[in-house]
Image 1 (cartoon, helix red, strand yellow):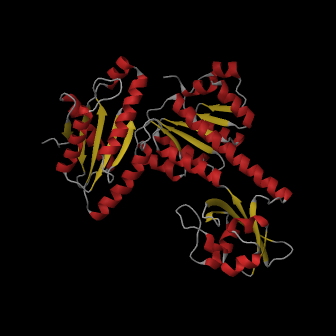
Image 2: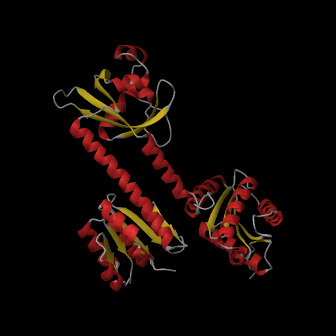
Image 3: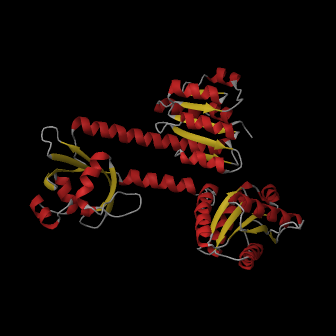
Length: 431
Protein backbone atom coordinates (compact mmCIF):
# COMPACT_ATOMS: atom_id res chain seq x y z
CA UNK A 1 0.00 0.00 0.00
CA UNK A 2 1.29 3.43 -0.93
CA UNK A 3 2.21 5.57 2.05
CA UNK A 4 -0.53 8.09 2.79
CA UNK A 5 1.76 11.10 3.24
CA UNK A 6 3.65 10.26 0.05
CA UNK A 7 0.32 9.95 -1.78
CA UNK A 8 -0.86 13.37 -0.57
CA UNK A 9 2.45 15.06 -1.34
CA UNK A 10 2.56 13.76 -4.89
CA UNK A 11 -1.10 14.49 -5.63
CA UNK A 12 -0.75 17.73 -7.59
CA UNK A 13 -4.50 18.32 -7.79
CA UNK A 14 -4.76 18.18 -4.00
CA UNK A 15 -1.77 20.50 -3.57
CA UNK A 16 -3.22 22.99 -6.09
CA UNK A 17 -6.60 23.01 -4.32
CA UNK A 18 -4.90 23.87 -1.03
CA UNK A 19 -3.11 26.80 -2.67
CA UNK A 20 -6.25 28.01 -4.46
CA UNK A 21 -8.29 27.95 -1.26
CA UNK A 22 -5.35 29.26 0.80
CA UNK A 23 -5.75 26.47 3.32
CA UNK A 24 -3.04 24.91 5.47
CA UNK A 25 -2.86 21.22 6.35
CA UNK A 26 -0.87 19.69 9.21
CA UNK A 27 -0.01 15.99 8.83
CA UNK A 28 1.13 14.12 11.96
CA UNK A 29 2.49 10.57 11.93
CA UNK A 30 5.14 9.02 14.12
CA UNK A 31 8.24 8.20 12.13
CA UNK A 32 7.04 9.52 8.75
CA UNK A 33 10.23 10.10 6.78
CA UNK A 34 9.79 11.58 3.33
CA UNK A 35 12.43 14.27 3.44
CA UNK A 36 13.52 13.71 -0.15
CA UNK A 37 9.96 13.94 -1.44
CA UNK A 38 9.34 17.06 0.64
CA UNK A 39 12.50 18.71 -0.69
CA UNK A 40 11.57 17.86 -4.29
CA UNK A 41 7.97 19.08 -4.09
CA UNK A 42 8.30 21.98 -1.62
CA UNK A 43 4.68 21.81 -0.43
CA UNK A 44 3.56 25.35 0.35
CA UNK A 45 0.41 24.52 2.24
CA UNK A 46 1.38 21.32 4.10
CA UNK A 47 3.25 21.04 7.36
CA UNK A 48 4.60 17.61 8.29
CA UNK A 49 5.42 16.38 11.78
CA UNK A 50 7.10 13.01 12.32
CA UNK A 51 6.15 12.92 16.00
CA UNK A 52 3.14 13.97 18.01
CA UNK A 53 5.27 16.26 20.17
CA UNK A 54 6.44 18.11 17.07
CA UNK A 55 2.90 18.09 15.73
CA UNK A 56 1.56 19.80 18.85
CA UNK A 57 4.16 22.57 18.50
CA UNK A 58 3.45 23.00 14.79
CA UNK A 59 -0.26 23.16 15.50
CA UNK A 60 0.21 26.07 17.92
CA UNK A 61 2.50 27.87 15.47
CA UNK A 62 0.66 27.37 12.17
CA UNK A 63 -3.03 27.26 13.25
CA UNK A 64 -3.87 24.85 10.39
CA UNK A 65 -7.31 24.61 8.82
CA UNK A 66 -7.09 20.80 8.60
CA UNK A 67 -5.15 18.40 10.85
CA UNK A 68 -4.58 14.83 9.63
CA UNK A 69 -3.53 12.56 12.49
CA UNK A 70 -2.38 8.97 11.93
CA UNK A 71 -2.94 7.13 15.23
CA UNK A 72 -0.83 4.04 15.79
CA UNK A 73 -0.91 3.93 19.60
CA UNK A 74 -3.61 4.70 22.15
CA UNK A 75 -1.18 6.96 24.04
CA UNK A 76 -1.31 9.40 21.13
CA UNK A 77 -4.93 10.31 21.89
CA UNK A 78 -3.78 12.73 24.61
CA UNK A 79 -2.04 14.86 21.98
CA UNK A 80 -5.24 15.06 19.97
CA UNK A 81 -7.04 16.22 23.12
CA UNK A 82 -4.37 18.88 23.73
CA UNK A 83 -4.56 20.18 20.17
CA UNK A 84 -8.28 19.92 19.54
CA UNK A 85 -9.88 23.20 18.52
CA UNK A 86 -13.25 23.48 16.75
CA UNK A 87 -11.70 26.11 14.48
CA UNK A 88 -9.61 23.37 12.85
CA UNK A 89 -11.02 20.30 11.10
CA UNK A 90 -9.47 17.12 12.50
CA UNK A 91 -9.22 13.95 10.41
CA UNK A 92 -8.20 10.96 12.51
CA UNK A 93 -6.81 7.88 10.77
CA UNK A 94 -7.56 5.03 13.19
CA UNK A 95 -5.72 1.93 12.04
CA UNK A 96 -6.44 0.12 15.30
CA UNK A 97 -9.10 -2.18 16.71
CA UNK A 98 -12.16 -0.23 17.87
CA UNK A 99 -11.99 -0.05 21.68
CA UNK A 100 -13.20 2.20 24.49
CA UNK A 101 -10.28 4.56 23.79
CA UNK A 102 -11.85 5.24 20.40
CA UNK A 103 -14.84 6.80 22.17
CA UNK A 104 -12.54 9.49 23.59
CA UNK A 105 -12.01 10.78 20.06
CA UNK A 106 -15.77 10.90 19.45
CA UNK A 107 -16.40 12.81 22.69
CA UNK A 108 -14.29 15.67 21.32
CA UNK A 109 -16.78 16.09 18.50
CA UNK A 110 -14.45 14.73 15.82
CA UNK A 111 -16.54 13.10 13.10
CA UNK A 112 -13.99 12.84 10.29
CA UNK A 113 -12.57 9.42 11.08
CA UNK A 114 -10.98 6.88 8.75
CA UNK A 115 -11.00 3.36 10.18
CA UNK A 116 -9.44 0.15 8.91
CA UNK A 117 -9.03 -0.80 6.15
CA UNK A 118 -7.10 2.44 5.55
CA UNK A 119 -6.05 3.39 2.02
CA UNK A 120 -4.62 6.66 0.63
CA UNK A 121 -7.69 7.01 -1.59
CA UNK A 122 -10.09 6.80 1.37
CA UNK A 123 -8.03 9.35 3.30
CA UNK A 124 -8.00 11.69 0.29
CA UNK A 125 -11.77 11.32 -0.04
CA UNK A 126 -12.20 12.34 3.60
CA UNK A 127 -9.83 15.29 3.13
CA UNK A 128 -11.68 16.43 -0.01
CA UNK A 129 -14.96 16.26 1.90
CA UNK A 130 -13.48 18.49 4.60
CA UNK A 131 -12.11 20.90 1.98
CA UNK A 132 -15.55 21.14 0.45
CA UNK A 133 -17.18 21.81 3.81
CA UNK A 134 -14.58 24.48 4.63
CA UNK A 135 -15.16 26.17 1.29
CA UNK A 136 -18.91 26.22 1.99
CA UNK A 137 -18.35 27.69 5.46
CA UNK A 138 -16.02 30.29 3.97
CA UNK A 139 -18.62 31.21 1.37
CA UNK A 140 -21.31 31.56 4.03
CA UNK A 141 -18.97 33.64 6.22
CA UNK A 142 -18.12 35.96 3.34
CA UNK A 143 -21.80 36.28 2.49
CA UNK A 144 -22.66 37.18 6.06
CA UNK A 145 -19.91 39.80 6.19
CA UNK A 146 -21.15 41.27 2.94
CA UNK A 147 -24.71 41.40 4.23
CA UNK A 148 -23.64 43.10 7.43
CA UNK A 149 -21.46 45.59 5.59
CA UNK A 150 -23.95 46.53 2.88
CA UNK A 151 -27.10 46.06 4.98
CA UNK A 152 -28.57 44.24 2.00
CA UNK A 153 -31.49 42.06 3.05
CA UNK A 154 -33.08 41.59 -0.36
CA UNK A 155 -32.99 37.77 -0.08
CA UNK A 156 -33.90 37.63 3.61
CA UNK A 157 -37.05 37.88 5.67
CA UNK A 158 -36.49 41.02 7.73
CA UNK A 159 -38.69 42.37 10.50
CA UNK A 160 -38.57 44.49 13.65
CA UNK A 161 -39.93 43.39 17.03
CA UNK A 162 -41.05 45.71 19.82
CA UNK A 163 -42.76 44.50 23.02
CA UNK A 164 -43.02 40.98 21.54
CA UNK A 165 -44.92 42.30 18.50
CA UNK A 166 -43.79 42.65 14.89
CA UNK A 167 -44.02 46.37 14.14
CA UNK A 168 -42.37 46.44 10.72
CA UNK A 169 -41.19 44.03 8.02
CA UNK A 170 -39.85 43.91 4.47
CA UNK A 171 -41.60 42.80 1.30
CA UNK A 172 -39.94 39.36 1.31
CA UNK A 173 -41.47 38.65 4.72
CA UNK A 174 -45.00 39.42 3.49
CA UNK A 175 -44.53 37.54 0.21
CA UNK A 176 -43.26 34.42 2.00
CA UNK A 177 -46.28 34.19 4.29
CA UNK A 178 -48.73 35.39 1.62
CA UNK A 179 -50.00 38.70 2.99
CA UNK A 180 -50.45 42.08 1.33
CA UNK A 181 -49.54 44.08 4.41
CA UNK A 182 -48.40 43.72 8.01
CA UNK A 183 -51.86 44.52 9.40
CA UNK A 184 -53.33 41.49 7.61
CA UNK A 185 -50.49 39.30 8.91
CA UNK A 186 -50.95 40.46 12.52
CA UNK A 187 -54.66 39.69 12.39
CA UNK A 188 -53.80 36.00 11.85
CA UNK A 189 -50.57 35.57 13.84
CA UNK A 190 -49.86 36.68 17.39
CA UNK A 191 -46.31 35.36 17.80
CA UNK A 192 -43.66 34.71 15.16
CA UNK A 193 -42.57 31.44 16.84
CA UNK A 194 -45.83 29.76 15.84
CA UNK A 195 -44.32 29.36 12.35
CA UNK A 196 -41.49 27.13 13.65
CA UNK A 197 -41.90 23.52 12.54
CA UNK A 198 -40.98 21.01 15.24
CA UNK A 199 -38.30 18.74 13.75
CA UNK A 200 -35.29 17.03 15.28
CA UNK A 201 -32.17 19.11 14.79
CA UNK A 202 -34.01 22.41 14.39
CA UNK A 203 -34.96 25.08 16.90
CA UNK A 204 -38.54 25.34 18.11
CA UNK A 205 -40.07 26.37 21.40
CA UNK A 206 -43.23 25.57 23.30
CA UNK A 207 -42.92 28.96 25.05
CA UNK A 208 -43.65 31.39 22.25
CA UNK A 209 -42.49 34.48 24.13
CA UNK A 210 -38.97 33.12 24.76
CA UNK A 211 -37.90 32.72 21.12
CA UNK A 212 -36.43 36.23 20.87
CA UNK A 213 -34.26 35.87 23.99
CA UNK A 214 -33.08 32.47 22.76
CA UNK A 215 -32.17 33.93 19.36
CA UNK A 216 -30.30 36.86 20.89
CA UNK A 217 -28.06 34.34 22.66
CA UNK A 218 -27.35 32.13 19.62
CA UNK A 219 -28.23 31.98 15.95
CA UNK A 220 -30.91 29.35 15.40
CA UNK A 221 -31.70 26.99 12.55
CA UNK A 222 -35.44 26.85 11.96
CA UNK A 223 -37.87 25.28 9.50
CA UNK A 224 -40.90 27.24 8.25
CA UNK A 225 -43.45 26.77 5.47
CA UNK A 226 -44.64 29.51 3.15
CA UNK A 227 -48.24 30.26 2.22
CA UNK A 228 -48.14 27.42 -0.35
CA UNK A 229 -46.95 24.89 2.21
CA UNK A 230 -43.38 24.67 0.86
CA UNK A 231 -40.91 24.08 3.70
CA UNK A 232 -37.59 25.94 3.82
CA UNK A 233 -34.69 26.12 6.26
CA UNK A 234 -33.61 29.48 7.67
CA UNK A 235 -30.84 30.84 9.85
CA UNK A 236 -32.60 33.01 12.43
CA UNK A 237 -30.65 35.95 13.85
CA UNK A 238 -31.72 38.79 16.13
CA UNK A 239 -29.92 42.00 17.11
CA UNK A 240 -30.87 44.81 19.46
CA UNK A 241 -31.03 48.16 17.68
CA UNK A 242 -28.38 50.44 19.23
CA UNK A 243 -30.43 53.61 18.80
CA UNK A 244 -33.54 52.05 20.38
CA UNK A 245 -32.93 49.33 22.98
CA UNK A 246 -36.61 48.36 23.08
CA UNK A 247 -36.49 47.28 19.44
CA UNK A 248 -34.91 44.24 17.83
CA UNK A 249 -34.15 43.58 14.18
CA UNK A 250 -34.66 39.96 13.15
CA UNK A 251 -33.33 38.37 9.98
CA UNK A 252 -34.25 35.00 8.51
CA UNK A 253 -31.69 33.92 5.91
CA UNK A 254 -32.75 30.99 3.76
CA UNK A 255 -30.14 28.20 3.88
CA UNK A 256 -32.22 25.35 2.45
CA UNK A 257 -29.65 24.35 -0.17
CA UNK A 258 -26.75 24.58 2.26
CA UNK A 259 -28.73 22.64 4.85
CA UNK A 260 -29.51 19.93 2.29
CA UNK A 261 -25.80 19.63 1.48
CA UNK A 262 -24.99 19.42 5.19
CA UNK A 263 -27.61 16.72 5.76
CA UNK A 264 -26.26 14.78 2.78
CA UNK A 265 -22.71 15.02 4.14
CA UNK A 266 -23.98 13.71 7.47
CA UNK A 267 -25.73 10.85 5.67
CA UNK A 268 -22.65 9.98 3.62
CA UNK A 269 -20.55 9.85 6.78
CA UNK A 270 -22.74 6.97 7.98
CA UNK A 271 -23.30 5.14 4.66
CA UNK A 272 -20.90 2.80 2.85
CA UNK A 273 -20.16 4.50 -0.47
CA UNK A 274 -20.15 1.27 -2.52
CA UNK A 275 -23.15 -0.66 -1.19
CA UNK A 276 -25.15 2.29 0.22
CA UNK A 277 -25.92 0.48 3.46
CA UNK A 278 -24.75 1.44 6.96
CA UNK A 279 -20.98 1.51 7.40
CA UNK A 280 -18.94 0.21 10.33
CA UNK A 281 -19.04 3.48 12.30
CA UNK A 282 -22.82 3.81 12.06
CA UNK A 283 -23.25 0.15 13.07
CA UNK A 284 -21.06 0.72 16.14
CA UNK A 285 -23.24 3.67 17.15
CA UNK A 286 -26.47 1.70 16.70
CA UNK A 287 -25.03 -1.31 18.53
CA UNK A 288 -24.11 0.89 21.49
CA UNK A 289 -27.65 2.30 21.70
CA UNK A 290 -29.33 -1.09 21.22
CA UNK A 291 -26.98 -2.68 23.74
CA UNK A 292 -28.01 -0.17 26.41
CA UNK A 293 -31.66 -0.66 25.50
CA UNK A 294 -31.34 -4.46 25.71
CA UNK A 295 -29.59 -4.29 29.10
CA UNK A 296 -32.27 -1.94 30.41
CA UNK A 297 -35.15 -4.12 29.20
CA UNK A 298 -33.35 -7.41 29.93
CA UNK A 299 -33.63 -8.53 26.31
CA UNK A 300 -31.23 -10.73 24.37
CA UNK A 301 -29.33 -9.66 21.27
CA UNK A 302 -27.21 -11.51 18.72
CA UNK A 303 -24.58 -10.62 16.14
CA UNK A 304 -24.37 -12.37 12.78
CA UNK A 305 -21.06 -11.83 11.00
CA UNK A 306 -20.67 -13.19 7.48
CA UNK A 307 -18.43 -12.84 4.49
CA UNK A 308 -18.30 -14.06 0.91
CA UNK A 309 -16.36 -17.28 0.46
CA UNK A 310 -13.25 -17.14 -1.74
CA UNK A 311 -13.85 -13.50 -2.63
CA UNK A 312 -10.22 -13.01 -3.65
CA UNK A 313 -10.73 -15.73 -6.25
CA UNK A 314 -13.83 -13.91 -7.48
CA UNK A 315 -11.80 -10.73 -7.96
CA UNK A 316 -8.92 -12.60 -9.59
CA UNK A 317 -11.19 -14.58 -11.92
CA UNK A 318 -13.82 -12.02 -12.93
CA UNK A 319 -12.09 -8.73 -12.12
CA UNK A 320 -12.63 -6.14 -9.38
CA UNK A 321 -15.52 -4.48 -11.23
CA UNK A 322 -17.54 -7.69 -11.07
CA UNK A 323 -16.40 -8.16 -7.47
CA UNK A 324 -17.74 -4.71 -6.56
CA UNK A 325 -20.94 -5.44 -8.47
CA UNK A 326 -21.37 -8.66 -6.49
CA UNK A 327 -21.03 -6.73 -3.21
CA UNK A 328 -23.62 -4.19 -4.39
CA UNK A 329 -26.05 -6.90 -5.49
CA UNK A 330 -25.53 -8.87 -2.29
CA UNK A 331 -26.24 -5.80 -0.15
CA UNK A 332 -29.37 -5.03 -2.17
CA UNK A 333 -30.62 -8.62 -1.83
CA UNK A 334 -29.91 -8.70 1.89
CA UNK A 335 -31.82 -5.45 2.43
CA UNK A 336 -34.88 -7.13 0.97
CA UNK A 337 -34.44 -10.22 3.17
CA UNK A 338 -33.27 -8.81 6.50
CA UNK A 339 -36.18 -7.81 8.73
CA UNK A 340 -36.62 -4.09 9.32
CA UNK A 341 -36.13 -4.49 13.07
CA UNK A 342 -32.64 -5.89 12.46
CA UNK A 343 -29.63 -3.73 11.58
CA UNK A 344 -27.59 -4.63 8.50
CA UNK A 345 -24.21 -3.05 7.68
CA UNK A 346 -20.99 -3.53 5.78
CA UNK A 347 -18.26 -4.38 8.27
CA UNK A 348 -15.41 -4.02 5.78
CA UNK A 349 -14.22 -5.59 2.53
CA UNK A 350 -16.44 -8.59 1.81
CA UNK A 351 -17.61 -8.83 5.44
CA UNK A 352 -21.13 -7.87 6.52
CA UNK A 353 -22.79 -7.80 9.93
CA UNK A 354 -26.34 -8.04 11.27
CA UNK A 355 -27.63 -7.04 14.70
CA UNK A 356 -30.62 -9.15 15.75
CA UNK A 357 -32.53 -7.67 18.70
CA UNK A 358 -34.82 -9.34 21.23
CA UNK A 359 -33.95 -12.84 20.03
CA UNK A 360 -32.96 -16.36 21.05
CA UNK A 361 -30.31 -18.69 19.65
CA UNK A 362 -32.71 -20.69 17.49
CA UNK A 363 -34.10 -17.59 15.81
CA UNK A 364 -30.65 -16.07 15.24
CA UNK A 365 -29.46 -19.32 13.67
CA UNK A 366 -32.54 -19.49 11.44
CA UNK A 367 -31.98 -15.92 10.28
CA UNK A 368 -28.38 -16.73 9.35
CA UNK A 369 -29.25 -20.04 7.70
CA UNK A 370 -32.02 -18.53 5.58
CA UNK A 371 -29.64 -15.82 4.37
CA UNK A 372 -26.92 -18.36 3.64
CA UNK A 373 -29.32 -20.45 1.56
CA UNK A 374 -30.65 -17.33 -0.16
CA UNK A 375 -27.14 -16.29 -1.25
CA UNK A 376 -26.25 -19.80 -2.40
CA UNK A 377 -29.29 -20.04 -4.67
CA UNK A 378 -29.11 -16.55 -6.17
CA UNK A 379 -27.55 -15.66 -9.51
CA UNK A 380 -25.10 -12.76 -9.51
CA UNK A 381 -24.21 -10.79 -12.65
CA UNK A 382 -21.22 -12.25 -14.47
CA UNK A 383 -20.39 -14.70 -11.66
CA UNK A 384 -21.30 -18.38 -11.73
CA UNK A 385 -22.00 -18.75 -8.01
CA UNK A 386 -21.46 -17.11 -4.64
CA UNK A 387 -21.59 -18.60 -1.17
CA UNK A 388 -21.04 -17.11 2.26
CA UNK A 389 -19.99 -18.32 5.70
CA UNK A 390 -21.76 -17.13 8.85
CA UNK A 391 -20.76 -16.75 12.48
CA UNK A 392 -23.46 -16.24 15.13
CA UNK A 393 -22.91 -15.08 18.72
CA UNK A 394 -25.51 -14.38 21.41
CA UNK A 395 -25.21 -12.09 24.39
CA UNK A 396 -24.23 -13.80 27.60
CA UNK A 397 -24.51 -12.05 30.94
CA UNK A 398 -21.33 -10.25 31.91
CA UNK A 399 -19.68 -9.95 28.49
CA UNK A 400 -18.94 -6.67 26.71
CA UNK A 401 -19.85 -5.54 23.21
CA UNK A 402 -16.26 -6.15 22.14
CA UNK A 403 -16.38 -9.71 23.50
CA UNK A 404 -19.64 -10.40 21.67
CA UNK A 405 -18.03 -9.14 18.48
CA UNK A 406 -15.00 -11.39 19.06
CA UNK A 407 -17.28 -14.39 19.58
CA UNK A 408 -19.05 -13.75 16.27
CA UNK A 409 -15.64 -13.53 14.60
CA UNK A 410 -14.55 -16.83 16.18
CA UNK A 411 -17.76 -18.51 14.99
CA UNK A 412 -17.17 -17.17 11.47
CA UNK A 413 -13.64 -18.56 11.56
CA UNK A 414 -15.04 -21.97 12.55
CA UNK A 415 -17.48 -21.87 9.63
CA UNK A 416 -14.58 -21.15 7.28
CA UNK A 417 -12.40 -23.86 8.82
CA UNK A 418 -15.16 -26.46 8.59
CA UNK A 419 -15.60 -26.10 4.85
CA UNK A 420 -17.32 -22.72 4.28
CA UNK A 421 -20.88 -22.06 3.07
CA UNK A 422 -22.32 -22.85 6.49
CA UNK A 423 -23.50 -21.28 9.75
CA UNK A 424 -21.62 -21.74 13.02
CA UNK A 425 -22.88 -20.61 16.42
CA UNK A 426 -20.29 -19.65 19.02
CA UNK A 427 -19.83 -22.28 21.72
CA UNK A 428 -17.75 -21.79 24.84
CA UNK A 429 -14.87 -24.20 25.10
CA UNK A 430 -15.44 -26.71 27.88
CA UNK A 431 -12.72 -26.69 30.49
